[in-house]
Structure formats: structure tokens, C-alpha cells
Amino acid sequence: MRSDLEKTLLSKISDLGLLKTTVTDWQKEGKKVVFTNGVFDLLHIGHITYLAKAAELGDKLIIGLNSDTSVKRIKGENRPINDQNNRAALLASLFFVDAVVVFEEDTPLNLITELMPDILVKGADYAVENIVGAKEVIANGGEVKTIDFVEGYSSTRIIEKIRNQISEK
Picture (cartoon, rainbow, N blue to C red):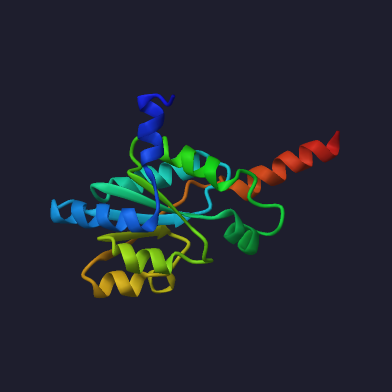
């Protein structure tokens, strides 16, 4: 039997159809919906800071999470380290995250055009004109924002550090 906490956590992990209805309801209530996406393989302080800043831009934060198969296509056969179920549960456990939705494609364009968030967010290493879904969100009256990264943190860097320490032994 699942605890109330576990039910709450799992209820944040959604499929696109259900989430689309939820987003429509939030927007009818006047809530600003923020969307961001990524792999979030090894959750670190850079991710937490970025996501917290994204959440502060609106009322509801949705994370589009790359599926395991899309991560392999993008990052290589040795990734992800954590499977999509674990990554989704970790993200859903953050109090400022309202929904997590896994997508199979290499980009979240389909999610963005289906959900049509009020604010689309990516890291400041992206120029707004190069952010997937930016023109669609802007054309719908939404905004696109970028957030600076916390320097020195990345899943790739952490994985390399672990591998280097193992190979030195």
C-alpha cells in the first residue's frame, strides 16, 4: 500500500494527455505555467538552482524529461546513468515542481506546442532564437526566458570525475 507522500509524488508524473487538461485548467484559473526540459541525469546543485529560478517565474512548473532512448541518442550509449523513472521521481520530489512529463523525441517541440506554456525557460547558453518552441510560445503570446547556470556543475563533469577516480585505482 502506498503512503500519501508516495501518491503525491507519483501524481506529479503525468502523460501528455492528462497534463494538457491540467495545464488548461491552471491557465483558466489565471496561473502562469512555466515549462523547461532536459535530461537531469545526476541531479546536482546546478539543476536545483536552475529549476528553482524557473519556478519563480510563474505559478506552476512543468519539466519535460528526455526518455532513456532519447538520452542515448543525444548523449551516447553510456547514458543515462539513472533511468527515466528514477529521474522523474527525483524531479517530482522537489516541492517547486508541479509536473514531470517524459518525452521520446530528441526535442520537446511536440510537448511545447501541445501544452503551450506561458513561459518557456532554458539555460543562458541558448540564444532565445535557437530555443526549441520559442517562436511557437511567443506567437501564442507567451514569453521565453533564459537562466544563468551555476558554474562548474554538470552531470557529464560528475560522471567524468567518477570514471577518472575509478580508473586511478
